[in-house]
Image 1: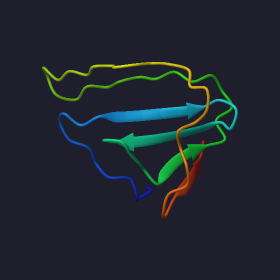
Image 2: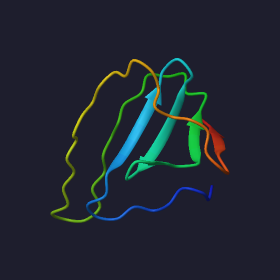
Image 3: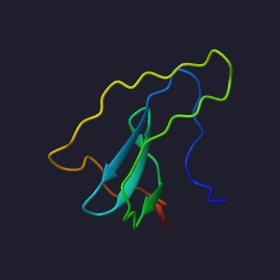
Image 4: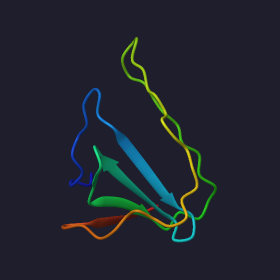
Length: 82
């Protein structure tokens, strides 16, 4: 288990930013970049949403290709190799 990212609750905005050139996946909670990220992803990527509770919902607000990453370095960042 890797400790570092905060948990999230109902009605928070969760963002996952995948950089296909670097092979990294970085997470954000309410706009705050999380320190633990995934690196060395070389396969095709599929995003899957799993709903645990009956009646739970998820709204995908956007899915887009960015001209450049919005990520940077954060304190205590940890790379987890895929």
